[in-house]
Length: 88
Image (cartoon, rainbow, N blue to C red; front, side, top):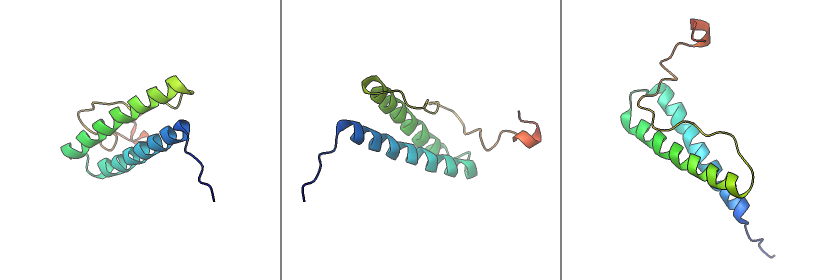
């Protein structure tokens, strides 16, 4: 059986999905550990990589969803007021 060559397009999407999954997992962790500075550094690092990868992919193929913001100092999602607490 002949193995199909992976296109650059497919490889780039797979790499973006891998980084996106990492960011989702870090998000879940930071929701319960909002003061973990090392985890926040990892989040910022991978968010920058994701943004760069999405920009490169978008310039070659088509735009993807906007990436998460980078260089946050603290994880405020879990500590901010929720909508039912008047956070909107």
